[in-house]
Image 1 (cartoon, rainbow, N blue to C red):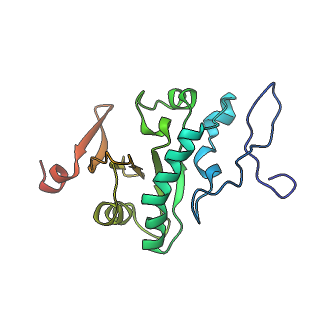
Image 2 (cartoon, helix red, strand yellow; image 1 turned 90 degrees about the horizontal axis):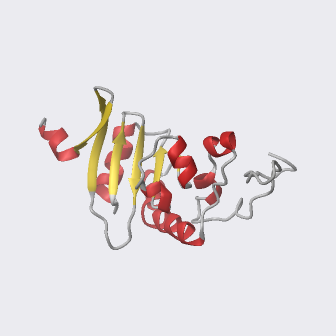
Length: 174
């Protein structure tokens, strides 16, 4: 925090500049900055500024999933990962086709709910493309306007590899 305002640094020539979207609201309770702050971008000097198309996708995600979720549970939804530029996605080991690259996905937690409760609120009540209970540590949700697949999965590490299992299979014990 500097001069009473939050800053997102976009590194150019080693100088920090104020982001032009620090206070841009996507919905009543979600700010664009929540989806672009990145420790990896800061650490490695990557510019994690989204395009207008990405901002539009983030807004759709908020309007159709995250804001309704917040209103449904009557509690803050904390974004732990949102938009990732290709460099940030690569350095953190994200998939080459991650929906985070397009602003169509976010990882989140709701401090007042357990992760299974958070997962179930989305699964039972909201539209989504993918919903993933990630390693028992956070929830990943994506929204793909007019093309939602409603894929619900659990991710696990098995022999050092990430494995995704369909929720229906997980529930049935397959």
